[in-house]
Image (cartoon, rainbow, N blue to C red):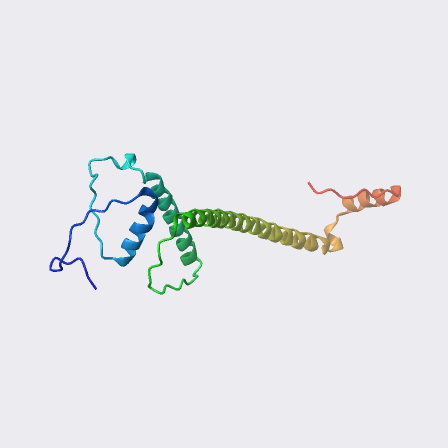
Length: 173
């Protein structure tokens, strides 16, 4: 197996590839691991190159993969890594992979948003539950007051109300 050490014998070669076959050839050579590439167009601005859009798409997919990995680590999901480098996907597979990754990112962001909303709703409902419990305890305590709580003045008002025959529902202000 060859390596790129200085003491290894090397050969400088220039390859001319057709545009249609360049991706497959470069991926095969890259998987072999015996190649080192030199940029012969170093004077060309990186934004003027033909492959800039593909690089950007790969960077977007890499960002999505980092996001997914972070979320998996946060949720303590173990990912089994066999240590082998997978083969470079074909360009048509890259498009499918990009669609799948974008869908996963969208779904996971939506799940995270729903989880935050559910947590907020849970806290609000828990607060209301405790408030209702305290209110119920308050009214149960008030209902158990003894008769000596009412004075003669209030007893007279209660007799007037029952004498008229109409008992108005109480209002708490």
